[in-house]
Length: 239
Length: 239
DNA sequence: AGCGCCATCTAACAAATGTTAATGCCCGCC
DNA sequence: GGCGGGCATTAACATTTGTTAGATGGCGCT
Image (cartoon, chains in turn yellow, brown, blue, orange):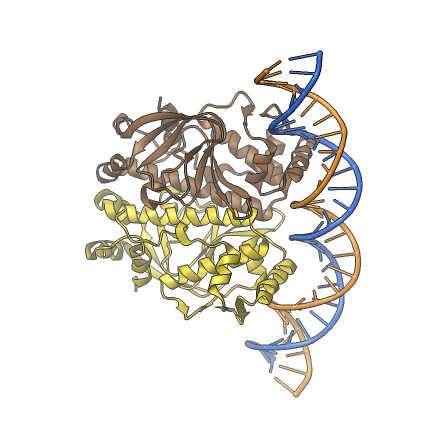
């Protein structure tokens, strides 16, 4: 059941059986969320952290004028609110972008891990650090990449992250986001989002239909995006 | 000497004398950097993490077309590359935006802290989590706030962060950034950056001259920015 | 004092992006 | 099979943002 989490963490460093067991013990119960449901509400103080077993979720903030901005997309194997373990108060919401199967890890058990399992603690810490690295890459994309490059970068990132947890199908992956939702990822209007997707299609590097993205020319897509996966820390080494 | 760091960490939870001592022991040597110098270069694998004692630093990435984007601003008391302790490879550079006095913490000593001092480990982890929270707020600002609101938000954030480490002077603080540098923070052209600063000035909420920002109307500034400091985790509670 | 450099600021125009509105299509529901 | 709603797409137009170029002014250096 926790296979995605193991794959995710083991991506960065070896994960012992004892550590896997500790993680399994930290999990209390599981739950399903329907598309559009809030998995964690903004302003709350959760006492557990949520692991995505299956589905796509997203962190978001809403402004007074009704504008919404997603600050991350979370794939299977991701802890969506591990940061709340120490941050305590959620300053943003987390919503299911597709039917989501999740599992909850009690903060008391996570705390016990920090007291007794230093290496596993570092791996969990690292997980949140990769989160931060992704945030930084998004900031760069929003500030200094062309919109087409931004979208291309997102496709590259999602493909690699989904590949790690075995959710890709050849050069395709399922992306259950409407163009309006995608617009709230890139910070664009829906109309312009449509233009940008069209532009990327026209270049011929991706096929995008029925919520399925197929990468036709990985090399050129990467080039357009200036995608360098270093920030995802995909090398396995002692941490 | 480490007063800023103590203030920074103690902002979130009590810091014991023993923990302060552990931090002090982790520090190996100090150094000064001139404005514009790289404190940490992109692509390197540092064996120590850098603490800002005094000055302003920034994380940045450079794109092929020469565009630069800052992904964070770092004030005294901030570890600029604590994440490199586990991320290992720097995927971005860190540059001194003003003369900087810094101190280095050996990764081996940080590792020892994770093995022996769980509470202090959580505080350091938390420090990187706040980093992430700031990143998310920047993403929201870049994607969905007006440029004026974005700038106002940045001013609010910097003011609060500088206040914590006692670098404000009444309602003023020193901000040693040229408009071109600020443009690389917000992701704008220099010309438009100038327009946006002008707009904020015209509203009358700030005075901005000689690299000194004075907040004339904190309440209204906060309103324009929709600034809610929750994400900075300024409440002191057990972590 | 004179020079040159750099940062700020402005103007005029070009390009990117947002807004409003309309069309067509698919798909679930009655 | 018809109906209605959501989504993708496009058009026309408004607004924001970028580009290029130049003017101004402070400030260190000689």
